[in-house]
Length: 257
Image (cartoon, rainbow, N blue to C red; front, side, top):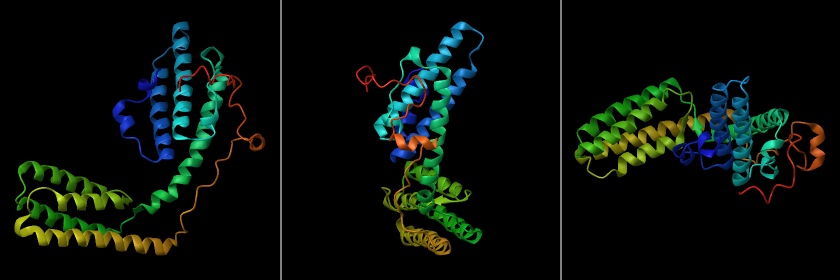
């Protein structure tokens, strides 16, 4: 399997900007594609076994390459084994080590995610839905052309759907509000009312966030703790450990990264 067997161009373009989050999402997508491909093969068939071996090596290859580009250690410092040198035990160990580090990365990102989101009370959601209802009325009475109205209807639908989640992204709320206010066209006589409704929504979200942070007393943002290797003795090796017996250290000149 090659890179675009694991992820397509659209998925690649939609990966998050944050390097750790992008790595997590890439591995998630690639792992699903690998499992799907392996599930289509017959392990008793010699030809299928060769295809499965190449697919596993491809996964190790693209994950390591992605880690190098995104500076994700310890995988960025690892060497990719030759195809013939990758044993099944090497592959299993690689998967286990990836899972170990990804678990730590997921929890590192959890605090940052909560700072960028807010859990709304039922009362706050009810108030926001009421404001959205009146915003829809203002939109239909506006001087926008039909194409603009259709696009903004979609944005309001997406916003209302966000309210069904346990937590909503504050940046997404602000972006929807901004897009409505700066859309080309005219809200005509409804402009002042629309601005007021949007400001009220932002105020509700802001008050909920302040209240939540005060209850939780969030500590200041700190750098994530260093990722730890899955085996204690590997701490002493300063990332020199091979994750599988087939990972040689003489491949830098042979891998086109």
